[in-house]
Image 1 (cartoon, rainbow, N blue to C red):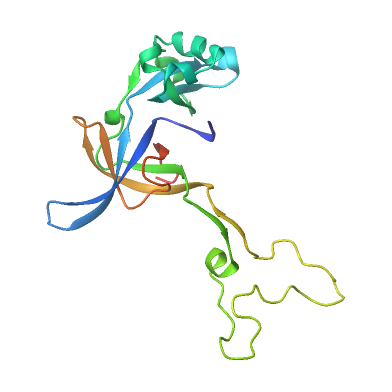
Image 2: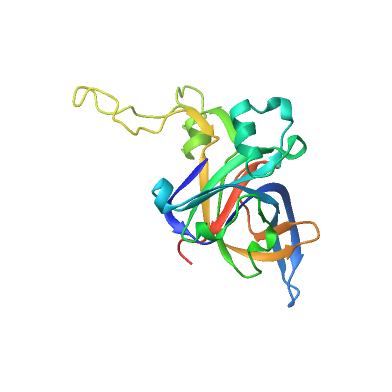
Length: 219
Protein backbone atom coordinates (compact mmCIF):
# COMPACT_ATOMS: atom_id res chain seq x y z
CA UNK A 1 0.00 0.00 0.00
CA UNK A 2 1.55 3.27 -1.10
CA UNK A 3 1.09 6.58 0.64
CA UNK A 4 1.53 9.28 -2.00
CA UNK A 5 1.27 13.03 -1.78
CA UNK A 6 3.43 15.36 0.28
CA UNK A 7 6.48 14.11 2.11
CA UNK A 8 6.15 13.49 5.83
CA UNK A 9 8.44 13.19 8.80
CA UNK A 10 6.81 10.46 10.91
CA UNK A 11 4.43 7.60 10.14
CA UNK A 12 3.46 4.20 11.53
CA UNK A 13 0.97 1.39 10.95
CA UNK A 14 -1.41 0.36 13.72
CA UNK A 15 -4.29 -1.95 14.54
CA UNK A 16 -7.55 -0.49 15.84
CA UNK A 17 -8.41 -2.15 19.16
CA UNK A 18 -11.57 -0.18 19.95
CA UNK A 19 -12.71 2.90 21.84
CA UNK A 20 -12.70 3.90 25.50
CA UNK A 21 -12.45 7.05 27.57
CA UNK A 22 -9.80 8.77 29.67
CA UNK A 23 -9.81 11.81 31.94
CA UNK A 24 -7.45 14.75 31.72
CA UNK A 25 -5.95 16.72 34.59
CA UNK A 26 -9.08 18.88 34.82
CA UNK A 27 -11.26 15.78 35.18
CA UNK A 28 -12.85 16.17 31.76
CA UNK A 29 -13.84 12.99 29.94
CA UNK A 30 -12.11 12.44 26.58
CA UNK A 31 -13.31 9.76 24.14
CA UNK A 32 -10.31 8.00 22.60
CA UNK A 33 -9.56 5.29 20.06
CA UNK A 34 -6.98 2.73 21.17
CA UNK A 35 -4.45 1.84 18.47
CA UNK A 36 -1.81 -0.87 18.76
CA UNK A 37 1.00 0.97 17.00
CA UNK A 38 3.65 -1.43 15.79
CA UNK A 39 6.22 -2.51 16.39
CA UNK A 40 6.83 -2.03 12.68
CA UNK A 41 9.97 -3.28 10.97
CA UNK A 42 11.60 -1.34 8.16
CA UNK A 43 11.77 -3.77 5.24
CA UNK A 44 13.12 -1.43 2.56
CA UNK A 45 14.62 2.03 2.22
CA UNK A 46 14.23 3.93 -1.05
CA UNK A 47 16.45 6.87 -1.96
CA UNK A 48 16.49 9.61 -4.57
CA UNK A 49 19.65 8.25 -6.17
CA UNK A 50 18.45 4.67 -6.62
CA UNK A 51 14.64 4.86 -6.82
CA UNK A 52 13.94 8.47 -7.75
CA UNK A 53 12.21 9.32 -4.48
CA UNK A 54 12.78 9.06 -0.75
CA UNK A 55 10.62 6.56 1.17
CA UNK A 56 10.64 3.72 3.67
CA UNK A 57 8.65 0.49 3.49
CA UNK A 58 7.50 -0.93 6.82
CA UNK A 59 5.96 -4.26 7.78
CA UNK A 60 3.36 -4.86 10.47
CA UNK A 61 1.57 -7.89 11.88
CA UNK A 62 2.60 -11.54 11.78
CA UNK A 63 1.62 -14.04 9.09
CA UNK A 64 2.22 -17.78 8.82
CA UNK A 65 5.18 -18.71 6.66
CA UNK A 66 3.09 -21.01 4.46
CA UNK A 67 0.98 -18.04 3.37
CA UNK A 68 3.95 -16.03 2.11
CA UNK A 69 5.12 -16.32 -1.50
CA UNK A 70 8.74 -17.15 -2.27
CA UNK A 71 9.55 -13.72 -3.75
CA UNK A 72 8.09 -12.00 -0.68
CA UNK A 73 10.02 -14.35 1.63
CA UNK A 74 13.25 -13.31 -0.03
CA UNK A 75 12.29 -9.65 0.29
CA UNK A 76 11.42 -9.97 3.99
CA UNK A 77 14.51 -12.00 4.86
CA UNK A 78 16.72 -9.18 3.57
CA UNK A 79 15.51 -7.15 6.56
CA UNK A 80 16.44 -9.91 9.00
CA UNK A 81 12.97 -11.40 9.39
CA UNK A 82 12.54 -15.15 9.87
CA UNK A 83 9.65 -17.56 9.36
CA UNK A 84 8.47 -16.87 12.93
CA UNK A 85 7.92 -13.15 12.33
CA UNK A 86 7.13 -12.61 8.64
CA UNK A 87 5.08 -9.42 8.30
CA UNK A 88 1.52 -9.59 7.02
CA UNK A 89 1.05 -5.97 5.98
CA UNK A 90 3.49 -3.78 4.07
CA UNK A 91 3.13 -0.04 3.65
CA UNK A 92 5.32 2.61 2.06
CA UNK A 93 5.70 6.11 3.48
CA UNK A 94 7.39 8.98 1.70
CA UNK A 95 9.70 10.87 4.05
CA UNK A 96 12.49 13.36 3.52
CA UNK A 97 15.06 11.61 5.69
CA UNK A 98 14.61 8.00 4.53
CA UNK A 99 18.36 7.51 4.25
CA UNK A 100 18.65 7.93 8.02
CA UNK A 101 16.67 4.70 8.60
CA UNK A 102 18.23 1.25 8.60
CA UNK A 103 16.65 -1.85 7.11
CA UNK A 104 15.64 -4.18 9.94
CA UNK A 105 15.20 -1.46 12.57
CA UNK A 106 11.90 -1.05 14.42
CA UNK A 107 9.42 1.80 14.67
CA UNK A 108 7.33 1.82 17.84
CA UNK A 109 4.58 3.91 19.40
CA UNK A 110 7.05 6.42 20.84
CA UNK A 111 7.65 7.80 17.34
CA UNK A 112 4.79 10.13 18.28
CA UNK A 113 4.37 12.15 21.47
CA UNK A 114 1.42 13.31 23.53
CA UNK A 115 -0.08 16.41 21.99
CA UNK A 116 1.00 15.59 18.42
CA UNK A 117 -1.55 16.22 15.68
CA UNK A 118 -1.90 13.34 13.20
CA UNK A 119 -3.92 12.22 10.19
CA UNK A 120 -5.36 8.70 10.41
CA UNK A 121 -6.19 6.70 7.27
CA UNK A 122 -8.25 3.52 7.27
CA UNK A 123 -10.92 1.57 5.42
CA UNK A 124 -14.46 2.34 6.54
CA UNK A 125 -16.89 -0.37 7.58
CA UNK A 126 -18.65 -2.04 4.66
CA UNK A 127 -22.44 -1.57 4.66
CA UNK A 128 -23.25 -3.61 1.57
CA UNK A 129 -25.97 -2.52 -0.89
CA UNK A 130 -28.05 0.30 0.62
CA UNK A 131 -30.89 2.50 -0.54
CA UNK A 132 -30.69 6.22 -1.12
CA UNK A 133 -32.15 7.08 2.30
CA UNK A 134 -29.37 5.39 4.26
CA UNK A 135 -26.64 5.94 1.68
CA UNK A 136 -27.29 9.63 0.95
CA UNK A 137 -29.51 10.74 3.88
CA UNK A 138 -32.42 11.49 1.57
CA UNK A 139 -35.97 11.96 2.91
CA UNK A 140 -38.71 9.41 2.42
CA UNK A 141 -41.96 10.09 0.61
CA UNK A 142 -45.47 10.19 2.11
CA UNK A 143 -46.37 7.04 4.01
CA UNK A 144 -50.13 7.48 3.56
CA UNK A 145 -52.35 5.16 1.52
CA UNK A 146 -51.98 5.68 -2.21
CA UNK A 147 -48.42 6.93 -2.19
CA UNK A 148 -46.05 5.01 -4.45
CA UNK A 149 -42.84 6.72 -3.35
CA UNK A 150 -42.14 5.69 0.23
CA UNK A 151 -38.37 5.14 -0.04
CA UNK A 152 -37.59 5.62 -3.73
CA UNK A 153 -34.85 7.94 -5.01
CA UNK A 154 -37.25 10.51 -6.42
CA UNK A 155 -37.09 12.26 -9.76
CA UNK A 156 -34.67 10.89 -12.33
CA UNK A 157 -34.57 14.21 -14.20
CA UNK A 158 -36.40 15.89 -17.07
CA UNK A 159 -38.48 13.94 -19.61
CA UNK A 160 -37.12 14.79 -23.05
CA UNK A 161 -34.28 17.19 -22.32
CA UNK A 162 -31.72 15.90 -21.61
CA UNK A 163 -33.71 12.65 -21.72
CA UNK A 164 -31.31 10.73 -19.53
CA UNK A 165 -30.23 10.39 -15.92
CA UNK A 166 -27.45 12.88 -15.25
CA UNK A 167 -24.10 11.69 -13.98
CA UNK A 168 -23.72 11.93 -10.23
CA UNK A 169 -27.36 11.21 -9.45
CA UNK A 170 -27.54 9.87 -5.90
CA UNK A 171 -28.95 6.37 -6.18
CA UNK A 172 -28.87 3.10 -4.22
CA UNK A 173 -25.62 1.17 -4.39
CA UNK A 174 -22.61 -0.13 -2.53
CA UNK A 175 -21.94 1.76 0.70
CA UNK A 176 -18.79 1.82 2.81
CA UNK A 177 -15.52 -0.11 2.49
CA UNK A 178 -13.65 2.91 1.10
CA UNK A 179 -10.41 4.58 2.14
CA UNK A 180 -11.04 7.51 4.47
CA UNK A 181 -8.60 9.93 6.10
CA UNK A 182 -9.60 11.80 9.25
CA UNK A 183 -7.39 14.85 9.66
CA UNK A 184 -5.96 16.73 12.63
CA UNK A 185 -6.58 14.27 15.46
CA UNK A 186 -4.74 14.73 18.75
CA UNK A 187 -2.53 12.11 20.38
CA UNK A 188 -3.85 11.99 23.95
CA UNK A 189 -1.58 9.37 25.49
CA UNK A 190 1.26 6.96 24.67
CA UNK A 191 1.61 3.64 26.53
CA UNK A 192 4.96 2.08 25.67
CA UNK A 193 4.41 -0.95 27.94
CA UNK A 194 1.46 -2.03 25.79
CA UNK A 195 2.74 -0.21 22.69
CA UNK A 196 -0.56 1.63 22.15
CA UNK A 197 -1.48 5.15 21.13
CA UNK A 198 -4.68 6.83 22.32
CA UNK A 199 -6.18 9.15 19.70
CA UNK A 200 -8.88 11.68 20.58
CA UNK A 201 -12.14 10.89 18.78
CA UNK A 202 -13.01 8.19 16.27
CA UNK A 203 -10.96 6.80 13.40
CA UNK A 204 -12.18 4.89 10.31
CA UNK A 205 -12.54 1.13 10.26
CA UNK A 206 -13.79 -1.79 12.30
CA UNK A 207 -12.09 -3.31 15.32
CA UNK A 208 -8.85 -5.13 14.37
CA UNK A 209 -8.60 -3.24 11.07
CA UNK A 210 -5.29 -1.70 9.98
CA UNK A 211 -4.82 2.07 9.91
CA UNK A 212 -1.88 4.35 9.23
CA UNK A 213 -0.86 7.40 11.25
CA UNK A 214 1.20 10.24 9.84
CA UNK A 215 1.97 13.87 10.62
CA UNK A 216 -1.03 16.10 10.06
CA UNK A 217 -0.90 17.92 6.74
CA UNK A 218 -2.78 20.94 8.10
CA UNK A 219 -1.07 21.14 11.49
